[in-house]
Image 1 (cartoon, rainbow, N blue to C red):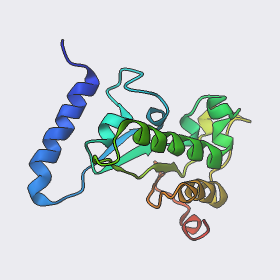
Image 2 (image 1 turned 45 degrees about the horizontal axis):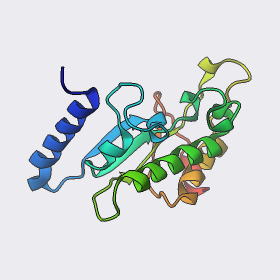
Image 3 (image 1 turned 180 degrees about the vertical axis):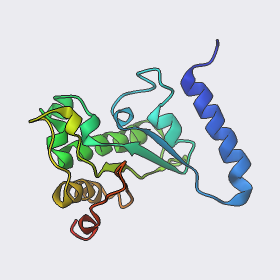
Length: 167
């Protein structure tokens, strides 16, 4: 009753880091993309982007454009603007780390999940087909922020591999 979800998750991650340290392995943590924008654990889901980034080696925000609400980042339909949605979300993540973790302290590498699937459930006019160009634009947003690692995600495992060499 005295701990928040975020406290418990961070304590767990600290324990994992401690116990895995002798094995010299990289530990990553996945978080919802919106956590890069909000301070603390704003939705009481246990995901505080900056706190987790201070613990793990790699933090992986799922910045799928389809998962942002209308007008998020002043983009009417975020799914239809993959470059800007990913760019603004990751820029927020970089800023959150810079604002909350002193330079001399450990902070995780940002390795985002990028969308490589079409979100038809958003309804006609609210989504685009995620093809080579849409995937390339997300990768370019990463590169423009000097983020050179990313993970593509498609629940059906059908990836736009040709986008990898175009950004």
